[in-house]
Image 1 (cartoon, helix red, strand yellow):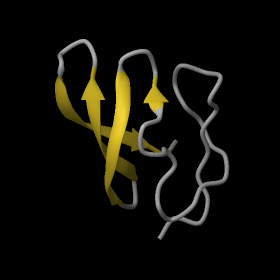
Image 2 (cartoon, one colour):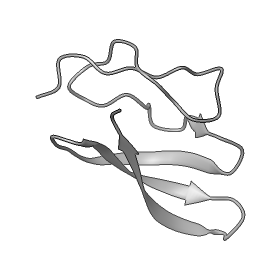
Image 3 (cartoon, helix red, strand yellow):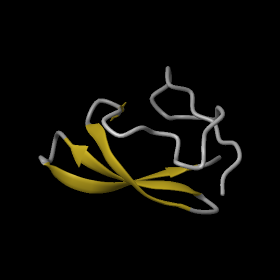
Length: 68
């Protein structure tokens, strides 16, 4: 379980803010200019993995957010 992680939503690369055990990104949230979060796939020691829609490729991809 992750007790804290950080993300700077104003920057292109995210850094850290408080988050819940359900992940940092919410379903439907846009990440950068090309990804939309579909669901949280897992949380581990290095960060979170999400299923996301890639607008440029037009398909679902895995998106890993690594903690610094």
